[in-house]
Image 1 (cartoon, rainbow, N blue to C red):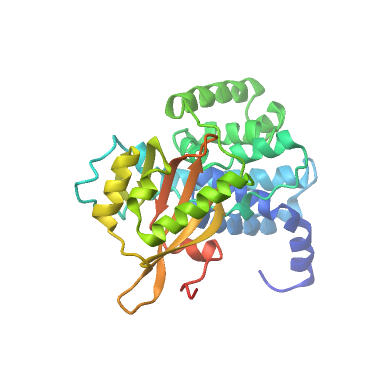
Image 2: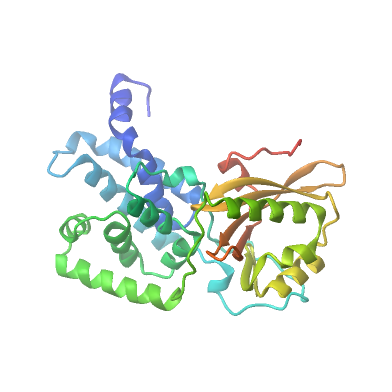
Length: 325
């Protein structure tokens, strides 16, 4: 856009909606990189048609309509973004892993994307549940229109009539799509462990132990922190693993870190604890290796780790290109 007074006025008007629209695009696409691109496309389309905006709906609803249509087009072109566990059964940790770089994998997003001004504890819990990586992954199993309806009705708490107006359909069709979406989610993600509160002191202690044990390459100690049937998956590798012992064998045999080789820097992703993991290169410099997102159950055990090898995520999370201690 040209740098004009009209541009500045338009930016001022729509800027309050930037964060929530980015979160909407992310939930729809499962990719923070795609979400940022589609937000820019949304704003470009909004700018080009702003003179024709007649105010028959709120500005927020109008922007969501544009963003939703942009996302639906993108889904038609790009398809869904899976996690490895959505492609098949678990793997043997003793077998070599082979990356599939041509698969558009699910991506985590920094907590800043989902920032909420809610003060009601129940609203905060609902918001956190709708940001969890497992929920974003489950959304990818839904047809695009059902995904829209579920997000707008259950996450954003829109009325059925509002969703029907946005999608240019009937209220009955919206309610039917919501029922089908919930039934589908129940099939793909029937059991969700309760998560520990992010501010729980015991969780912070667990995370500190986790990072320390990784940095010391104490795999035996790490295994004790995992739930017995914990899951570990690591895009772009399609293999995934179940069980604390199998996870320990995977780390030992496929990664085989030496003490001091790895450094973990804490961050937050999808309302969950996360780490930027740096690995020491041959020149002695610690560079980005993987971004880990952890699920910790209410019993204080690690239930799931998503280890993402896309190091472009480090910049998205504000993590340094090199760890200098």
